Amino acid sequence: MEIGIFGTGYVGLVTGACLADLGHTVFCIDIDQNKIESLQNGHIPFYEPGLKELVQRNKNKGRLHFSTDISLALKPIIFNCVGTPMAEDGSANLQYVFSVVDVVAKSNGFKVLINKSTVPPGTAKQCQERIRQINPTSETHVISNPEFLKEGNAVHDFTHPDMIVIGSQNQEANQLVKKMYSGLARPYLPVIETNWETSEMIKYANNSFLATKISFINEIANICDNVGADIKTVSKAMGNDYRISPKFLNAGIGYGGSCFPKDIRALVTVAKNKGYEAKLLNEVDSLNKRQKHILATKIQNHFGQIQGKTFAVWGLSFKPKTRDVREAPAFLLIQWLLDNGAKVNVYDPIVSQTSFGDNVTHYSSPQETVTGASAIILATEWDEFRNVNFSELCNIMTDKVLFDGR
Ligand code: UDX
Image (cartoon, rainbow, N blue to C red):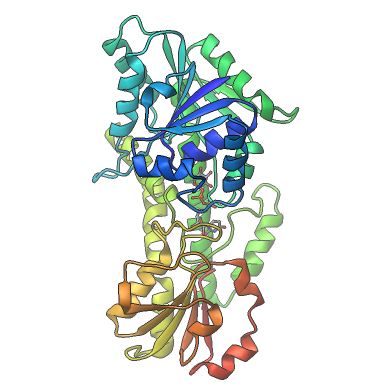
């Protein structure tokens, strides 16, 4: 099948490369000329394991194309994968989504426009109405088909989904989307076929639940600290209850990234605009913001005065296997350390720059960060931190303390 994709960000590029690998011919379009040029030269604008090889293989086979020419994306199947940044009031800014809709609306012939970006319930309906207003004879049908990709594992998540969700108001369009995904079909892969609003809501409900699970276990961890209980054992035991499951029960310094914080706030705002106050989700978000300061409190309580002391911060990205530092807890901690007169050494396996400039010193190994340090602060659980020889590090540290945020 011929497929057009608007937006070569995280979602668009992974979707395009994986669909090409299923044998489709895919045209990825972006307004950013530099990005397209570097993709044509085989350079991936972000870090994602396995993606570079996938892009290269499908480019070589002539199934994956990159261009700024939007007419190339006007195929029978079109994905809308442009960004939905957070507006000032917490809602999702849909201006880029609608600008794609406006382009597609003007083209004729049977088309399916798939909203892959996370958009609030009601967006697919708005898109379809917009198309009808611009071109009353349009044969474009809007579909909601949310993604469930985790950064660092996105290629595997696309090729081995837990489910495919299709929100549609048109049978023919629905069938075409199912056919497009037939390369992923397995006897046990559920395909949820539903209406637009339900499909859009499923994505928000999933992310809200996972964020709630994290804030819940962080709340339990904070109570554990106060009563002398061990959160790791509590969490492990809870995960043995099959109704709970062990996933997303790892307590720490809070969730970050581009999805959870943004999506929870967007859903709270959607609900508020409809007259419902989502108090639980509001608290999930508030607790997460407080959780990001929890190590600062522990460091303060341990040392009293931190001015003039050196701290080694391990990990900058919001989680391992990504370069993404959006809403990463490490940054709040570093800012707090600097504000309080501490010296900060940092190491991250792939993030080598921060907005702190010369105020922090970057090193190329965890070992190098600790010379003269009063404590190590583990902010991101990269695998390589598991194999550090702590006995050796103790010889070169001023104090031998580890604050484990993960
Ligand atoms: C998430 C969703 O999982 C994905 O389905 C959606 O499409 C996009 O948002 P992602 O943001 O890549 O994916 O990260 P994820 O692996 O889900 O982790 C989110 C955050 O939760 C990270 O900051 C992580 O450190 C934190 N987390 C996760 C915990 O603090 N504890 C856990 O037990 C699990």
